[in-house]
Length: 189
Image 1 (tube, rainbow, N blue to C red):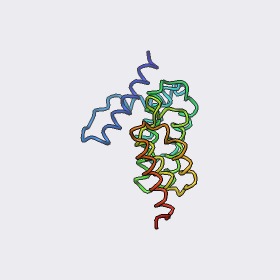
Image 2 (tube, rainbow, N blue to C red; image 1 turned 90 degrees about the vertical axis):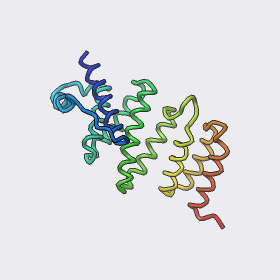
Image 3 (tube, one colour; image 1 turned 45 degrees about the horizontal axis):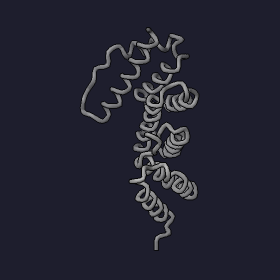
Image 4 (spheres, rainbow, N blue to C red; image 1 turned 120 degrees about the horizontal axis):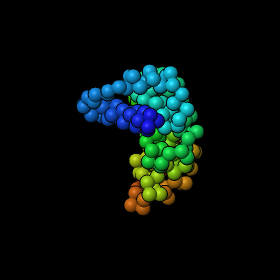
């Protein structure tokens, strides 16, 4: 019961903190400080759900401490098969949102980290919905590759992964991405 309570409390606290960043709402976080102190003294960190949600929580509350993000990514890789796809998608989303917050602060090393997380999510099919990659994730991956000036890699990605877009988005995404690649390579006359 304790494991269930702690993991669920951390999970929903993280979701509430994430939502606060997008909404003007201010949620009350009861007992969360006490749980944080309790976890520092307990052995519950050995339980994957608690360890992962605690790391997500730390990335949200101690954003400047980059080791929390690194540990989160390590735990995601370590426990890839231990959770439902939906829950793993949530962990990927938290890790990507951390990178996005850092990129907005002009911390360029997080461009590469975001690209790595996206690609792991695509390769293990956790960023696919019903077998398809969303056009937004596809576009984000292309944009990150171009931002890093990985032109050959980006071209390979476009050619390899366009087929896993839903058919209604495929042609436009392919053409737009190739045009964007040409623009970044300065191949436009």
